[in-house]
Amino acid sequence: MPFAYRGRMPRRLFLKAGAISIGLPLLDAMLPAGLIGQDAAAAPKRLVVLQRPLGTYAPHFFPERAGPAYEATRYLRLIDAHRGKFTVFSGMSHLGYPNDHRTEFALLSGVHPDMIRRMDDMRNTVTLDQEMAEAVGRQTRIPYLLLGPMHDGLSSNRRGVSLPGNTRRADVFARLFVDGTPAETAREIRRLRDGRSILDGVRDQLRMLERDTGAADRRRLDLLASSIREAERDLAQDEEWAARPKPRISARPEPDAGEWVGQSRQWFDLIHLALETDSTRVIVHRTPEQPAAPTAPGTRLGEHDASHHGRDPSKIEQVAAFEEAHFRLLDHLLRKLTDSTEGGRPVLDNTQVLFLSNMGDGSAHASNNLPVLLAGGGYRHPGHVAFDRARNQPLSNLYVRVLQQAGIRAESFGSSTGTLSELG
Image 1 (cartoon, rainbow, N blue to C red):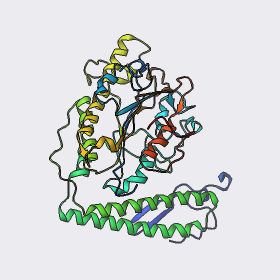
Image 2: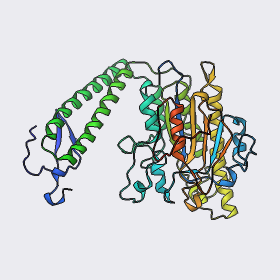
Image 3: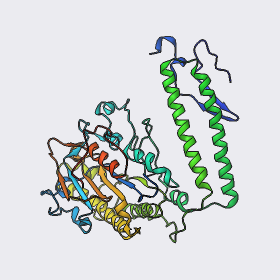
């Protein structure tokens, strides 16, 4: 395909490789002239992010006293059996973020607040899970799992491109544990190899195209080339793992529970299986808000309506019923990760479980004083780490510490100002 354009390039320009076409991004050259402007032998290092989008009623979550001897609050009593294995943080947030739902876009990236002020022009960067996956994901069959309906940007790659979530539990189970027939496996390997040859052809055409573009277009083409290199790397890993048998487990896919608490427990059981079999080491689970239906014991309102309680005691009790269900589910997962062992130690010791929300007070859409809890991971957990609730500690400082605990050499991440030193 010749690329010797001397004038404006056609908008619908494709790269060709046999019967495959890949559309180019919008380049300046397509616009009218007036518009151009860890070590393999080490213990596995894992990360699970459990994200809830509607905040937490603070008086039921944050203890009054700092340190390990805090009095457990209403919610923390539900996981008090794991005291010493988790840390509660108060007074943490991404500083300068607006008070609305768009903060979910940047919860795991900590991108500068200027990048999320306009709904029609939000710009993200790599999220904590993807930073972790780049370091440890190649050691397992599946580099990372994104479970539940991902809000735009909750998980983003290094170019800030949002990644989709998996909403069908049966599909995730099959990807983890169901082997194909020998013929299906051979067909999959051929498909992967064909994909690699297609990318090779496209890459050659990109080099030719770069000769006829300006600096801004070359940057866009470099972004596309980076995507191709990333796809090549993924295909190479997929090809390597396609010929290996998947883990043999006694569990079988369960019929859908039909209600939120049961469905969430089934997702958490699948998370445990994925970690126990070392099928992946990075998981993000986003719990969707629940509609107006009796999906948790004692509820009549939907979770969103209940979270906008306006200090109405009856609504606070409704939101507490949902949030207590979240903490019981967390207790369920922590028990399973504690009971499963590897190398004589609980799987939880090698797994950092980050339980948080992009909102503090859901009723006010507040983005400060976020509910943050970190469990497992081999830390010496100090109980309750209390920062100034008027002048919050950057949440990204915790993210730097999480990366370091995973053996990643990180001095900064997102909008961090340093490394959190309160965790041993």
